[in-house]
Figure 1: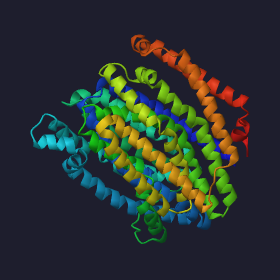
Figure 2 (figure 1 turned 180 degrees about the vertical axis):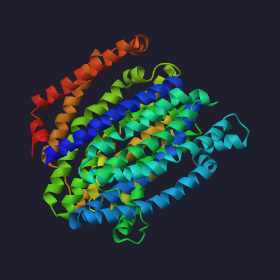
Figure 3 (figure 1 turned 60 degrees about the vertical axis):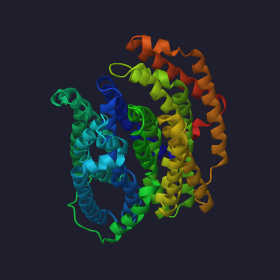
Length: 519
């Protein structure tokens, strides 16, 4: 069982790795040419709004509701019924997303005022900061249509994943990064504000991603003509599951939006500092957490339909151990080795030493919740695969309210770092409540084997961090050395850290062979 899941997970992780590398290159280019000033703040703001809605209509709540129902239709009725379901689902979803997208483009000033309240107030008062509101309103007209394209990209990706074609959907984000990088390099001189080229790149990336997946969908014989199917039995089931799932799976995104609103009142650069640190968190999260979560959701859904409860729990336990194996050292590594990483990736051009230090502070705060973010990705499918969305929505609301309280408590004292820390704290609360719910339902309880693995992973990670911290260079070395020297030093530290970590795990008899190769 775990061998096939591991193979699929490695495929997704490999494709995601390529995407994340290009994503880092994209951020490197943006940091070099745009920096972390007002224009960068506005772009990250304008890009975050449609990305939040993408989580709702596409990869987040929709996928968590759609995949279990799609598996049910596939297991019980076969491919002909799946094609009909896909046609009705795409037609219904298409109408809704088209309306939302048109509204977003037309009402972009309203959206900019709603989520960038601080900038809007400055605009009303005639303050110089008000120019951010005007630029955000314009950028949203470019970035909002991305929602339409990426919704159908997510729909087709969910279908392909259900048929174990994981590589296509995992590779697709590569084209968004290429489009943004290319647009900034070739079109920035065509705009009075170079950051507008980034917004254009988001639009182009959406189009390319959409076109890329169509041939694979056609080859799978799932490229059906969209039909309106609001009252279709299975479309209705997806709708019913999706409405509460909007909260259950998208709490982190809602938290980030709340952070954006508060950050619009803070120092210029706050949104950019949060963005750059969040992007570093997204690298291990996407590579490990999302990769494993992507492959276990269809598996868990099929196991639930076929009433295989023991294998269901075993699959979740395997996924959690795999997340612990990679998540624990990643979390500690980012907390204690963040500044060298930031210096290599971003410190050049318009990205200053001050920016480096500011990003490192929020990176520490975000990193404290990395393991929790990963656990949510694994635990949430435990509910959605069973078509239970009511429990996660209750937990999601609790976590969201907690995040707001944490924001109000921490932001006045720690500024943007308080926002990052509040996000990490609410994610930890979310993960704990998700696990407690599964345990009470008797669906999944962490095994003794996994508890022992937790201890061994922590001990190995501490040994790794202790060794690397002792050998590490001071920050002044990292910012004064040539880039090629810094890159080689960073790679050397990473390779040595991985070596130490796994050697200690082997000494502690962590049974890695069973984790990787058990059937």
